Structure formats: structure tokens, C-alpha cells
Length: 447
Ligand SMILES: Cc1cc2nc3c(=O)[nH]c(=O)nc-3n(C[C@H](O)[C@H](O)[C@H](O)COP(=O)(O)OP(=O)(O)OC[C@H]3O[C@@H](n4cnc5c(N)ncnc54)[C@H](O)[C@@H]3O)c2cc1C
View 1: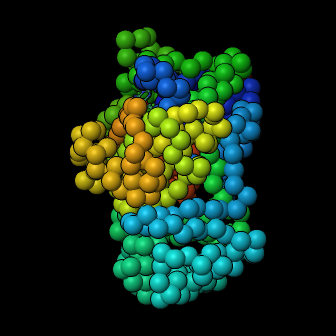
View 2 (view 1 turned 45 degrees about the vertical axis):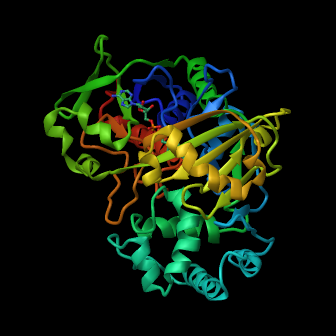
């Protein structure tokens, strides 16, 4: 079959690679001059090497994403922890580590909970009790409409435990606060990441830029199998006849026709390309409920080495996570490139780039004292206002099947169970391929 993929982010590219493997001819239509969507890298004019639009991490339990890298032959460009280990700094710069043990889950978390200095005994007991409860009891009675915050309160977690532990742990994964997130989504992540296996939450990082890791190789993979990636190709409208998509109207180009179509756009753009009666039909009607959440990354280049840590977390809301790109990439350099990654930033996001840098520096000085004296040679602030969707209470996510018989949905927002992650994007691409191949008999004639 000839198959069009609308959107060249991770979901579209993952679907494209899988379809190419199955012998289909794929064309990916991407509106921007480059593919990658929410995950790409670029080389700034100053020539500081590849810079990611935003720091990305994966976990041992994100198996679809790791399989995707294996397919591309780039998994060895990543480094992965054996067990979860996070150096955590409090607001005063005091360090205490979260480091899971070689014990069966959930016992693997108990030794680190005992030694962790940023929580009082009362909070630790609350956390141990709730983890045990989630592990042992069925939590499927939780209603779709309950927020994670209200569920935590109903389970006896106090304000300090929520702020000092649950908000800190879940914010970078869900990219929103415990009040914004649904209990169902948070519990899925806790079960998968914290409670399924001792290794599940171990962190994986790319040692190269994201485009080198998975965008350029995915493009090559598709092109080597007779496919095309058409950048600067914004899909404006679907041409629909009798519940069947017949073609794509592409900006400043001719109409392109295919046997089937996978739409891998963010949820807020899908309805725009649908003709009127289809925008609200069946699961397509769910799309207007999705709300975006931002992420902000502050890259700072120092003229001297700052720390031996590859990354660290901070309990300070304006700092959150610090990555040492120079150490992670294994580069020999006198400079050090740090990336401060802030999920769902609130006031910080509204500041100018210079103001945002000035706001975080005093906090960074407390965590990494060498930054006080070191000279900053350059900095770059990247704001992604629509980085992810908010997995809010009551949000219903569509599956790949739509009322249009040869048109399927992929994208991190579709019903993969995962929050907006690379795992969800890749899994959604696979789900769309399965649905497309299963349903193709309904529109392909035997001749
Ligand atoms: C700063 C940042 C940090 C993140 N950190 C992490 C992390 O640490 N770990 C993790 O797992 N996930 C992380 N994520 C989330 C993850 O990157 C995304 O969930 C995932 O990449 C989304 O993939 P997607 O293909 O569904 O959507 P997108 O990447 O948004 O792809 C959609 C594509 O469609 C294109 N498009 C839009 N309209 C049109 C049109 N009309 N015609 C043609 N093309 C169009 C867009 O340009 C885009 O390329 C992060 C995201 C950001 C932004």
C-alpha cells in the first residue's frame, strides 16, 4: 500500500519505519523545515555543538521507545542506569540521594526511603503505606474524574508529602502538578515505573543530540525502503468522499493521493485538517478537550568544569532538573554545558529569557557552588509552550480508529495509557499501524 503520514514527529516516524518494514511505501508530510516535532536537536550559529530543543530522558520500562532505537541501530548511543539513582538537592543545597536497591519491588524502594534526608519520618511512613497499598490492592475503582491530588489526600498524604515527594517525582513525568493530573494517569506511571520491577524507573539518556539519536536515522530508515520525508509540507485539508479519505491538500503543492493515511499531529491541530462534518464525529470529538502544558530549558555554557554529576534534581520548583551535557556526552572539554529543565513552569515561563536566567542563577549557585565564580560564556533559553498535553481528570483519549475508514490516529495523546512521552509516541505509531493493517481489507479491493 501507499501510505501517507501526516506529521513527522516521533509517532509519525515510528509508524513510518514499521510500515516500511512491512513492505508499504510511506510518505511523511511535515510542516516544518525539519522533522522531529517535540524532540529534535539543532546546531546554533555560535557552533557550540548539537543542542536539544529540550532534555529528554527515558526509563528502563519504556520498552517501545527502546525497541524503536534498536530498530534504528542507535540504542548504543544512549547510556542507561542499572537501578534508579538521583542526587536530590533541597532548597538550601543539601544533598540526599534516591537510590533503589537490588530487592524485589516494592522493597527496592524501602532502604532509600529510610536514608533519604529530605523527608521527615511521618512523610516516609505515609509514602511506604501508600506504595504498599497501590501494589497490593486493586486501584481500578478510582474514578476517571478524580485528580491525583484529591486521591492522595483521600489516602492520608499530607501537604508536605505531596509537595516534597509526589509533586517532585511526578511533575517531570506528567509535566503538570498533582492537582492538574488525573489519579488514573499518575497511578499508571507509579505502577509501571516504581512498583513493577526494581529496574523499571532506571534512567536512560542520549549521549548525542536527539536528531542524531532518532530523527536522522528514522528518516534514513524510511528513505532506504523507498519512502520519502517531505518537510515544508503543511497538510491543510483532507479530501473526503463517502467516509473514505481520497487525498491531501498540501500548502502550495498539488493534491497527493494514497491508499491510507495516519494522522500523527498534536491533538490541537487534527480537527483543522478535517472537513466540517467529520471534525466532531465519534472519537474525533474528543480532541477539543486536550490542553497543552509548557516546558522550559535553560542551556548555560560555563568556561570551566562545574561538577562531576551527570544530572541532579532539585526540590526548588524553578530549578527541578539539572543535566550536565558535557559529562553525559563524554566530551573532553574545558567548558561545561548545563541544561536546566523545568516542567510545567508557571511564573518563570512568563519572564523574558534574560530574566529567567537571572531568576534561576541564585538557586543554581546553592546546588552547584562552583557556578558562583565561574564565567558564563553563553546561554540559550528554549520555551516550548505546547510541549505536552495535560493528562487531566476526566480526559478521554481516542484510539487509532476513526469514522473515516482509511484514516487512523497516532500521537502521544492517543490511548496508549502513557502520559505525553516518547514511549507513548512510539507506542501510538505501532497501534496505528496495527489498526491500519487489520482494517485495510475493508477498502482495498481484491484486484
Ligand atoms: C521540551 C520537551 C521535553 C520533553 N521531555 C521528555 C522526556 O524527558 N521524556 C519523554 O519521554 N518525553 C518528553 N517530552 C515529550 C515528547 O517529546 C513528546 O510526547 C513526543 O515527542 C510527541 O511526539 P508526537 O509525534 O506525538 O508529536 P509531535 O512531536 O508534536 O509531532 C507532530 C508533528 O506534526 C507536525 N505538524 C503540525 N501540523 C502539521 C500539518 N498541518 N501538516 C504537517 N505536519 C504538521 C509538527 O510540526 C510536528 O513535527 C518532552 C517534550 C518537550 C517539548
